[in-house]
Length: 149
Image (cartoon, rainbow, N blue to C red; front, side, top):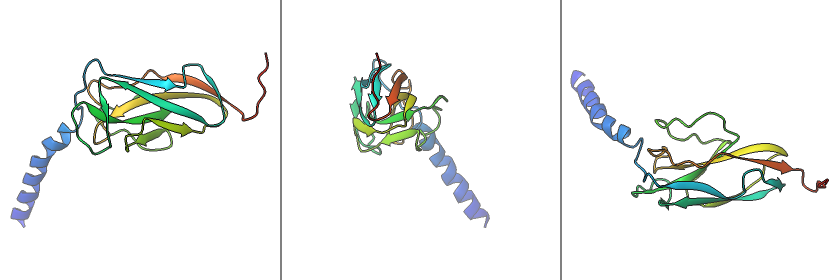
């Protein structure tokens, strides 16, 4: 029984550095992540397209471990900072684009919303330094609402 415990402990110690290595994968210092559309302060009606821009890095699928490449994550109405030592969460506020998508059609309820992009590595961890866009604020109007001047 002691042998099995020692083997399990040895395996855990060997695998521990590999798990830590997947965190904080380096990114070029001049990498830039940004929104093509919408723009800061833009008013949109109903559903709208969100297009992601990236300079000095490539876009790939989640799980593909290429140097200087990752995949997009869109944060919707997220106020808490991303923990660089944890994978980016996946829920209704943290949208993953692991198939290498660079755009999405988004439908949000009417009102004010914030959007931010984060580039994740093959295992959904943020890069080091983090590759994030500026956080933008948009206003979603009711479909069919009339603009007053």
